[in-house]
Amino acid sequence: MIVFITGGVRSGKSSLAEKLAMQLAYEESRLVYAACGQRTDSEMKERIRHHQDRRANSGARWITVEQSVDLGQIETAPSDILLVDCITTLLAGEFFREDKPVSEADERIVSDLLSLAGRAHAVVLVSNELSFEPMPGELTAQYAKKLGLVHQRLVQECETAILVEHGIPIVKKGGILCAE
Image 1: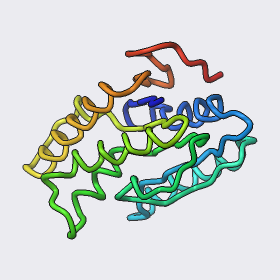
Image 2: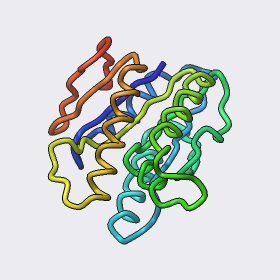
Image 3: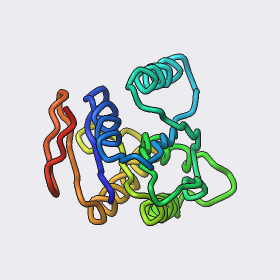
């Protein structure tokens, strides 16, 4: 099962994703949090700390794997619930790696995520919605185009797609999942 959650910055999508992942877990499940962000500046360090604190206080036992590229290498079990946060930072990591061409970044990401979904009980994906933002510069426009392609492909493959606006989840595809 794949659940895709997107929304604007600070919309509440990560909190919703964590609640849904915990809801999908059963007794044998491990909650695995794939953290794709890198500590690049003080703002990102603070966001990472905030997410870590929220998981620590969730009442669940999370296993955190910091992986900014090549998510297909994460070891999973068939009972695992994997939360990937987030696709936008994962794509940024792909854009700045030197060992693989950026032209294939979207295919690598989709392939890795579908591979994980085939090996785990559920994968909850978090991403940022950038389609409403201005895209100055060629590199930024290329990034936004790749992100849009990744989103389209993942939404085709997922069972549930949710857009979060102002903390309100809006189900765009699939059944309603409750994360109260």
